[in-house]
Image (tube, rainbow, N blue to C red; front, side, top):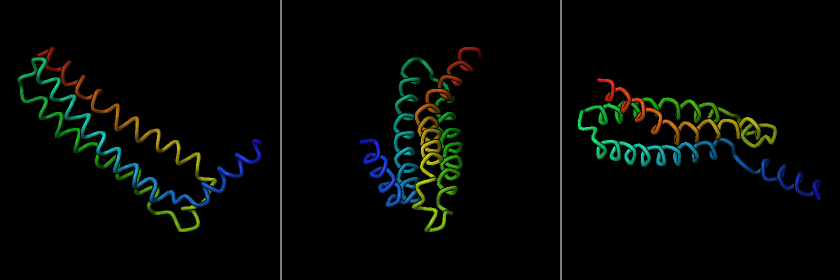
Length: 122
């Protein structure tokens, strides 16, 4: 049974183009990131942050996430055609996906929290 599943996973990895898959994930992560950032910033503004800091947070976060996402995409975009379908890269791909999604989901909350803390101090 495990042999069959292993063969199916290997066949899927052989057909999968790591370049396209990472590019798709970067695009989706940017959409999720943007939606979360807007939601978190609006929530922070409703809770009493009436300064310009939430808008500054938006600018900083947008400026910061784009280079990071480009790094993930560039790393996989430059693969040759043979490497793009190499099942041996599945582990590295999963690690990069995890990092990308942690960044996309976690960064809006982390930085908005930092800006709220700065506002509370001053």
